[in-house]
Length: 117
Length: 109
Image (cartoon, rainbow over all chains, first blue to last red; front, side, top):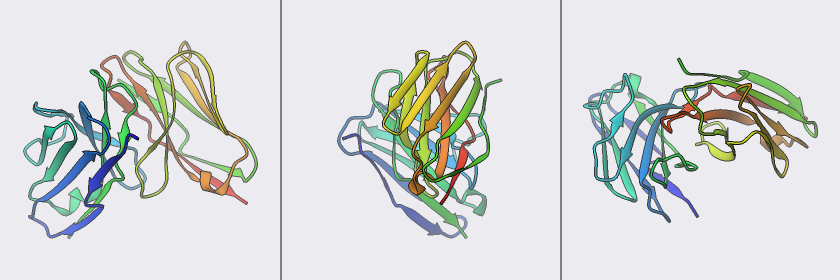
């Protein structure tokens, strides 16, 4: 159990376009979903925390108008990178947890590798 | 500020034992996680410690000392597939995960 999927696994797009990444909890309902970004040889960087039905909480330095997060249901959260630029190329990983504080084990999706040309 | 330190890289021999240390300074503490991450893949959960002591799970064990702000991950009978990055993460008082930069473990035959 506790499987989290992401789609797409990888995407290549042109500069200026928008890209949507989906994160789904397949066999459980996730009260909280997290979006991370990871650059090569660096650790995970939390971008935002989202709870179903409410606005996402963004980390300092993350532009909420550029990285749109929608957590429409307990099993689906989406991250849209708007007007992507080459510096947005990265590995984007979502995770999901259950529990009212989100402190239970986080189950990670397989990640989405974004390359912006 | 909040800080988690772990070595950048370690090398060990197949079949041997390796200990990866993690020290932390965070605003509050609600547990410490160890994750394994193979290159190009998402992290996978290894262990969670919230009380002092050693937790053993197969070839992997994790130790915590809250008074010292210190944890280690012990890997026994190393296999080539254990080559990966090992991430230490602490849950702070706001239940937010603070991530270390990870330790890249290289296993040699």
